[in-house]
Image (cartoon, rainbow, N blue to C red):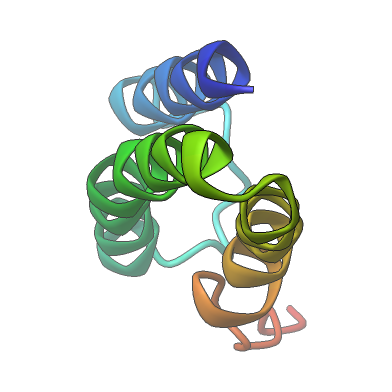
Length: 84
């Protein structure tokens, strides 16, 4: 799972560098901010889940179950694209 997080981050960095990949309606500043948060909190959450597995498998599963919800609901932009 942590390797998926790293791969996804690399894809996002590539999309930041090549501006023609993203549609022009995407807010570049917001996209960079979300990517930074992802790089910061992704490894922390995955590491916490891995350490928690030694303490309690149920706690570890809860943490790993929370990770997708964090990135979907708390680490994404809720702005609708501007129709042209």
